[in-house]
Image 1 (cartoon, rainbow, N blue to C red):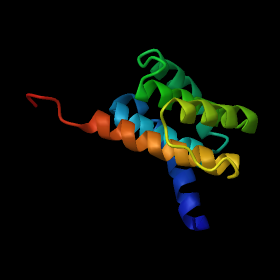
Image 2: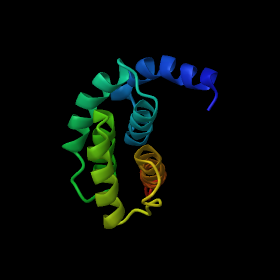
Image 3: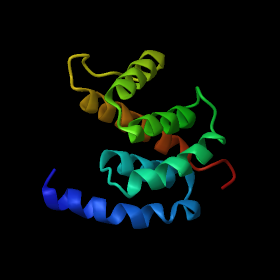
Image 4: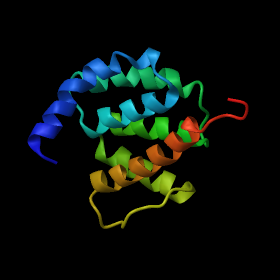
Length: 129
């Protein structure tokens, strides 16, 4: 990814996260994904408390609950914990990457799958809408 693109995302992330409360769950999850893929000293501390509140609404074992918990692990930026979470969620029901791939690549692959699935589920129209 070009440096200019990365810089633009990193510069915009704090103001986007400031809109957290006004956004729907799908947008919140997308913002969380952006924040962990392009972490800064400002975004990760702002993200963690927001995700902890979000966890209360989404139990472990649900797509959204698993996604939120995985993003929290990624936000901690500890490779061993991230690798353990990748293995756990891959074994549960997500398609994994080659075990020989670097941890960050495996985590980003899983994150992309989760965001795609959760986002499509959250943005579907409800009957009667």
